[in-house]
Image 1 (cartoon, rainbow, N blue to C red):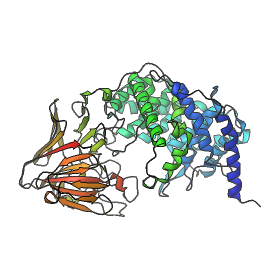
Image 2 (image 1 turned 120 degrees about the vertical axis):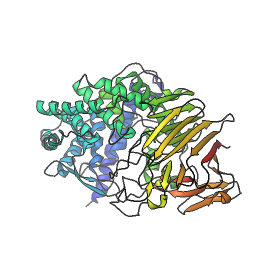
Image 3 (image 1 turned 180 degrees about the vertical axis):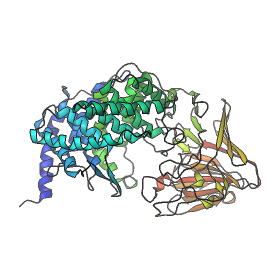
Image 4 (image 1 turned 90 degrees about the vertical axis):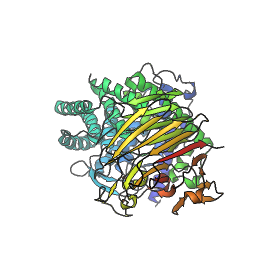
Length: 617
């Protein structure tokens, strides 16, 4: 008897081969797309079509599951792009009404039903095999119901009946949790899916409840275009609200939605660096990660949003093509990196099928507005001077005056690291966002920073221990001009200040001020720009797993880190690695790549420190 695994691989391979033959049939090149108006339909269809054979390579015919072990319910999210490819009529789409593809889709939905518990929940498992309890996974339910909309009339009777049983079970229980008065991204996504389920299954009460929640979401949006989960914007997770409202609007045509989406589009455009990444000090949830967020369907309903989409997608596409032509050192990359580069969609700079289908099926169209980041000079202010980005290219910098006390919630990061600096050739060099249990990321501390730290392996730490240390300011005030951006900060009884000043020689000065002799320390956190550090004293140090502590006497008057040169005032201390507490790992451990090299500036005798940064060849 043939080995089941071999048999499965043979069946999956045959299916990929058959469907892949059609995928090579002369699609219209996305390179011919008009990138001046929305939507770039040829590019989106090409992205969707290219994703199908890649998805089918990970299909397991005997179970109906997709993906690698351990299987997680989110692996089935590919049902939506597959269903779209099956249902979308286009001369460039060879999968339209393909019978074999429909069989795969049917099995994929059946696999979700097979794994549901009595409440329609799945085990929330991550690919590192950590588990987080049972969940009505919103991202899976929303894609499953949208896939059902597209294929329901073509599903074999037994499969349709099984899908409906699983969907009704899940949405019956989603309805029970949708009345929560608290606004969060997960129930917002649930409400979008519940509205669609209400339309499909002709349940007016579900539609009414879903709309009521989305109205609370819109009411909870700040006039500046963002949502908060504690205090100030959650930049990355705002995207969840924008996408959910965008899809909801397509199905509901609710007149309350477009203006909320317009406000969000303006906010997200305002916080972009000129390389397409977002300024991280403003975000209360996620640290800086280099990677272009291409936006989502909610951006298609305003000129600013469509400008965001076109600019970000074009930049993303160009970056992917570059990476495919010049892949990074495979040893330093995750195992999935080399596999992704091998895919045609990666090599061609295309979007994921999931992104493409949402933009194709649910989006608006129209004119575009340019991004603030396209200007060489200027300032973008958020709110009533709550945050700003100033551009004097090649330098750009962001200041965040959102301040609040740290809280116990592991997901809400301490608002501690309040400035970020970007260079056109290097990207973000200083800053990198907020974390917890890491006072060396704080712009200032008052007290002994060694009193606050994460104990390795602790899965339930006290994030606000009673220690003699203040690591997050209680108040911040911004003042800005072309000559200087300055922020004053209140830490308990003490006032401090930090400023950024562009100099005539093209360098940038960062100045810290605080009263001397009060156990205050300033910190300049640098992202991991290189694996070596070169000091003015002629020494080279490895930046790796080993701890590194160097004082100004060891360093000399400056050091070079990658292509960034940093002057070192007398009395300063350089520390590596100052690690992140990662909320997405159960024990808080983080990758070395997210650690910071920190220039610590203790105000023992001095009351002012001036650090000059520049780029060297």
